[in-house]
Length: 189
Image (cartoon, rainbow, N blue to C red; front, side):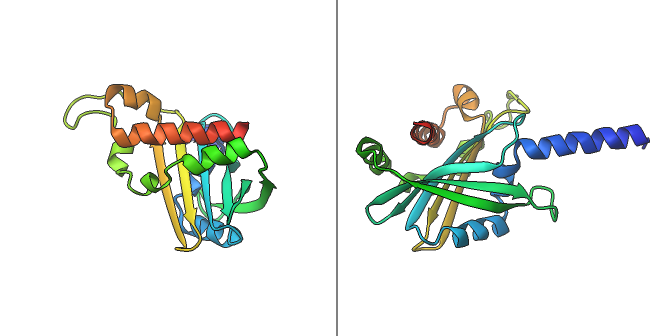
C-alpha cells in the first residue's frame, strides 16, 4: 500500500468516526454502563438522536424524569482512543422544564412500546430474497430509554427509517419514527 493510500484511508476513517460516533458508541456495553452511572439522580430517561454521516456528532439529547419533575438532559461525549467507536461522557447538562404543555405531551408518549420493537422491523430494507434499495451515508436514528429502577438500557436504532418505510412498511418502524419525531420536536422547542 502506498503512503498516499494510507493517508487517504486514515483521513476517511477519521471523518467517518466524527459523523456517526454517538449512535455506534451507544452500542458498546461500556458506554451504556457509564450513562447508567452518570444518570442515577433520575428515575428514567429518554433520548432521541438523528445522526448525520456528514456532521460531527458529539451529544445526545432527551428528557430525564424524577418523581413529578422533568428535565431536558444533554450528554456530551468525547472520543476515547481505546477503540474505534469508543466514546466517554465529557459532561452532562440538565435544565428543569416548567412548560406544562411540553410535560403533558411527554407524559402521553407510550414509552413501553420502545422495549418491544422487533429489531428486524426497524432495519428491514426490502423483502427477503428480492433486490432492494441500498443507500449509504444516511442518517442513523436512535432512541435510548433508561430505567434506573431496573438498571436497564434499551437502545433502538434505525437507518434511514423514513426512506425504507416507503418501500417496506412495518408497524414498529412507523411507531419508532413517530416517537422519534415527537421527541426531537420537543427537544428543539
